[in-house]
Image (cartoon, rainbow, N blue to C red):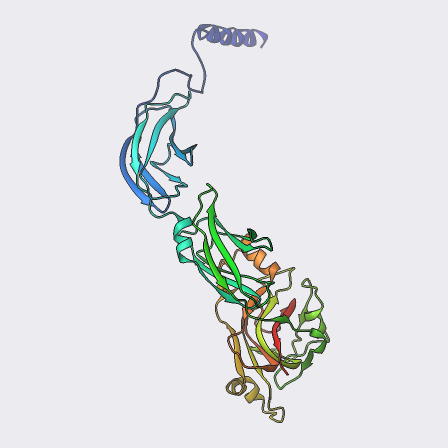
Length: 396
């Protein structure tokens, strides 16, 4: 047995000695030989960008293709692996022609000769978004709306003239949604000069849009006058009515499951006639866009409800013709930036934390409000609301 072991050992030694002049290395060796150049197939110009398609050279140690170009005097680099035959260059702030140099790069870090390609970017997002902005007066401030069809990451910077006459940035909105809206609040009902411009991450800037606007008057309606009404087919508040007005958005009011039907109704007496401008509704913050949180809803208002009518069917399908429709949240995009998406984006969560600012569409004074929740995010019956705030002008 010992002889056999010695014989095997001797054979192995002889094998390795015989191979000692060969390089056994599973990694390719390095060299100083530059790879061949790519050949351009096509250029697809995009908003502020361009997609370049090419043929790769036949080099076994090729690892990537690199584009080198300049934005605002700073050199930029974008690369793509050998597993694709295209790359996209971004960040151009105009439609001016741009020259891009493309290089083949191998495993040893050798660069080929550069291949120049001229691109003509389409209108950059900072310009197209800026041109779509609509600015107008809103309750307590100014409202903005814009379109961003390329869903580019941009920021909108809002300006207001301060007491010294200098325009200062007072709010920044970061967005990548296909469209958006924002309301800047906290201003008196007197003429102000507002401004807004758009910026992207490459520091491309749009012009500044200025508008002299007079915010509409409003104040926060004092909740100490609020009471819960119990009309036929209304859900019970389980003694939690005051939780909707306690400043705590983490808990809120659950309706009971006494009725177990949809829609879910509950009614509020504001305690005084009010010309409502808007309201803010918060989902319970532990689980926004889920569970019993309202998804689609309407709010009706009136000064003179028919309390003598005890017909349940009237309070489900008939009262609407006698009350004023104040708001109709019939589309999720009215308050959730990403729309009907199962995943919550950072913008969605920020919107839930800030509260959903819903403007009222009717200019008739009301005292009684009836919420008609037609759909929840998960459970079909019962509703939870974290907090409510109402704004407008109390009437005599």
